[in-house]
Length: 156
Image (cartoon, rainbow, N blue to C red; front, top):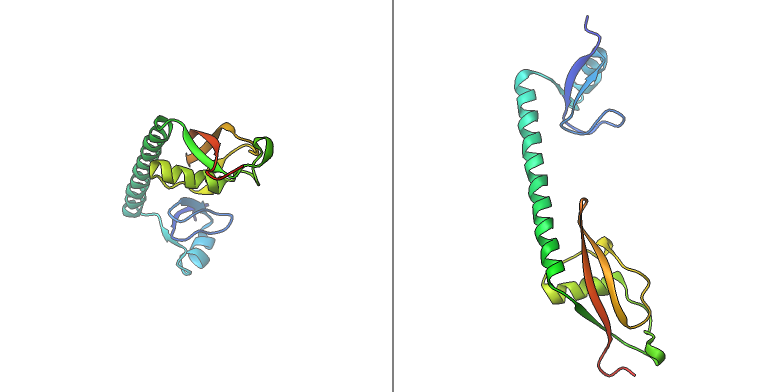
């Protein structure tokens, strides 16, 4: 009797693995639970080839996403200095502060690229001046966007 058998998970199983992973389990666990419940299939040669092809496609997709993120990074950094008009009070202090959503809207207006506000990191901005925002375009790609906070038309 085999000590361990290989199966390919068809759905994620807690504390075992994600869908598509090849795992080794006890033969009884595979025979009595995983396979009858449809959570796994036996790891035959053809199934292993399918898993390998699926993993190759996934790697290619991730590589394409990273290349697209690098192209977006270049486009954002080449654009130069963007301007963000804000309402200003006395001594160049802003009413409120610059938020990540303000920066996302500025990037969309200035470059046409849509960036999620949750992927933007900015310092606490409460005065006019030039600042930098860090934009995460991909887990491995960060872009730096320079912008200038200027008084809005009609401000004091």
